[in-house]
Image (cartoon, rainbow, N blue to C red; front, side, top):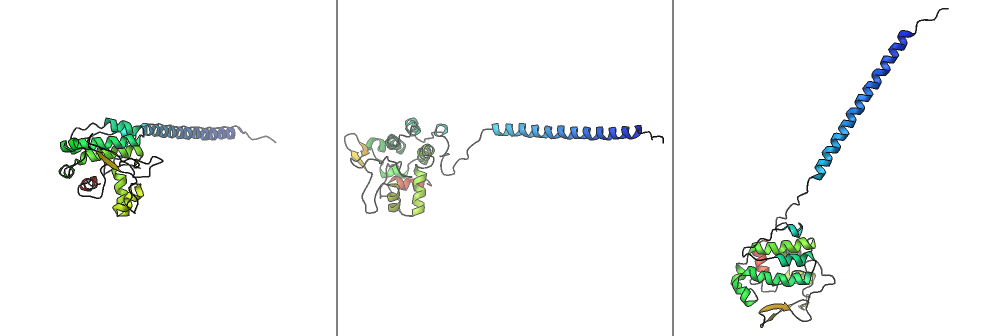
Length: 227
């Protein structure tokens, strides 16, 4: 019995197979192109520098301290304070803060070694925010005026705040205190009341210009400046 001619069927099968393979190859190339395009776009996006969002209360307190603009209304040089803070030398930075705040307060404070009421009433908010920003950046938000005021707002009482940060007990005993040296006309730590460095609790530094006469102390200036 004669066999049917199978050539047309074979040719048709070959064309169908070639068509399917060609379509699959096109899909693979398109997918590969999309993956490469995504990878390039993602790589370009990742290479872009991240800009930290500044805090609304200070001049970007959690930014790297080396990037902070050391703004001052009285042209105070805060470079030594920044250097002490970058080294995490909290005690040296605390003393340097005291000296620089005298410069920021005005000529009377520089001459006396403490800030009189009239200069405290007009204390530069710009300088207070610069000092706060340096402390906040170096300590990752642990120290600085903002950290201290946040504790005060949470507790709602100065005595409780002073107790929590380790400056004074609730019974009234000062754990850290400054004393005035009439010869040098500068403040220094009172003997036996130096900073506790093992390790200091949140809000501990800076310790300068604090007391319960709030209208003439740094507490009053911080409130006026919106801390």
